Length: 195
Image 1 (cartoon, helix red, strand yellow):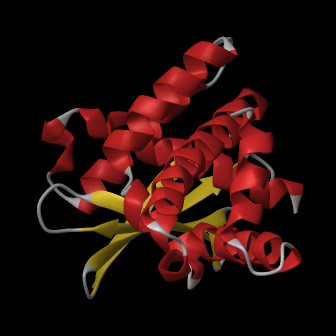
Image 2: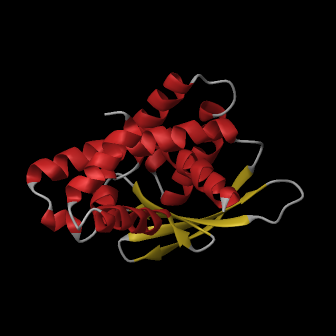
Image 3: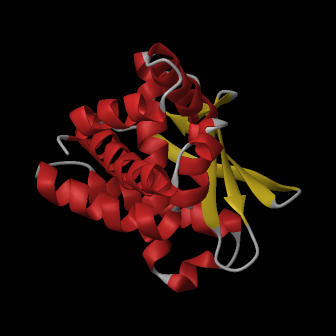
């Protein structure tokens, strides 16, 4: 499971880095190919944690549809939350993602990334890629890129496991343990992010 988490982290970063340059958003496939190359160079190595988080924050905002992903991960509780809870949740969700994933880029240890294809699927294009380390079989990774306007990433699926669905399950469990109250998740996110 730790290996799967590392792949999620690496791929999330691969996805966000170059989006800040509008010329890269020509096609979903070209976008993901470019992201793979730049993410490895900009988020790994001896980058200090505050700088890594700042870089990740900027690129996450530019490359991902945070509102859509955040709303999806809150699931049915989104409609139960009042506007103030929704706004706080989205801020905490973004901060949680930045802190959790940026920190893990320090664990990167030479994995390689390549795009192997793409296919349309309704309102998204699924960009197929592989992440591999010499001596190990490649991991299949699919990037769900919403098209129409500027492409935005809405999910990453590693070996058939969706990051968004996984996060949704984890958040639902926290809310359930808190008696079905969204405030229980907000409290947990505040604690995790130091907010």
